Structures are given as structure tokens and as C-alpha cells.
Image (cartoon, rainbow, N blue to C red; front, side, top):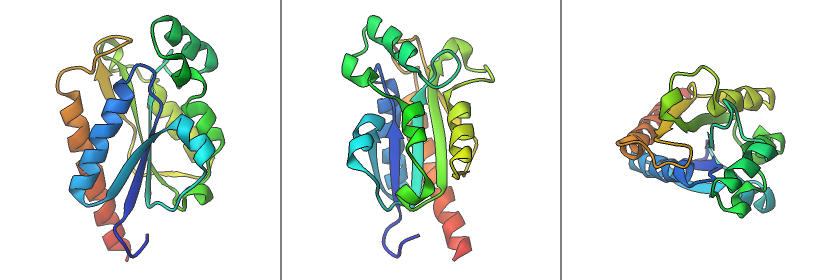
Length: 182
């Protein structure tokens, strides 16, 4: 961890905007905990390269009980998602990252999913966590799920506030862990 304020980057895939809202709320929580936090869609990071950060977070919508694929993103476009958001997703982004790229191996994962299937054991967060571990990352916590009322949303009542609180909790836990290690 750097000597300056610890930094966090929240990377997300969002087709209908719900995961982006969760990412924004998590960033507010991380900042409240004392981290220098920012967010970026997975599509912008493919061209911007790497950075030196202390905590990496990844969020993705659940498609067919997993991370999106080109076909599921095309289906989302047919349901009204903007076509430019469907060009690539978290699955493709994970294939291009390593701990060396960001200067950290610590990652936290979250997903969004339709409230009707909130307890389903398979989801984007679980898949993302497994794929990131294979790439050399260490999950700080098990993936967290945030609920939407339908495929297109909106976020279920209270989920944006819960995401902000969760971000603050993750930020505080990360800082406490770093303090104990130093």
C-alpha cells in the first residue's frame, strides 16, 4: 500500500444503468471510509491501461446466472440497453487483467441480479470471483449481491443506500487490514 491516501477503483459493467448506480454508491461509501475512490466502466479500461491502486472492485450484472456474454448482451440491447454498452463486458475485461496491471492483488466483487432470484447460488459475482482468483487475485470478501426489480431495473428500494453502506464497510475493513499488516 502506498504512503499516501489508499486508493480504490470500482470497475463495472452496466447495460441498463443499475450496476453503475451501485458502483457510484459504493464509491461514496469508500470515500466516507477514507479511501481515494473512483469508478470506471469496463469498456473505458480496455483502452486506458493500468494504474497503481490499493483496492480493486468489480461489479457486473447477472445474465443467465453468470457474467454476461456477447449473446446475452445482444439480448439486452434488444430489450432496450444502449448498444455501445454491449460491446464488451466484465468477462472479457477479467481476461485482460492481472495483479501486476493494477499494483494490487486485493479484489472485491459485487453483482446485480433480479430480486426474484436473489438466493440463486449461481450469479455474476460468484463467476467473477472464481475467474479473478485464477488470474492471481485475492478476494477480500465473498461477492455481494444488489437487487433490481426487473431485468431493466430499477434498483430495488433501499439498494443504493445499502451499496453505499457496504462500500463504507469494505473500505473500513480494508484500511483496518492494511493497518494490522504494517
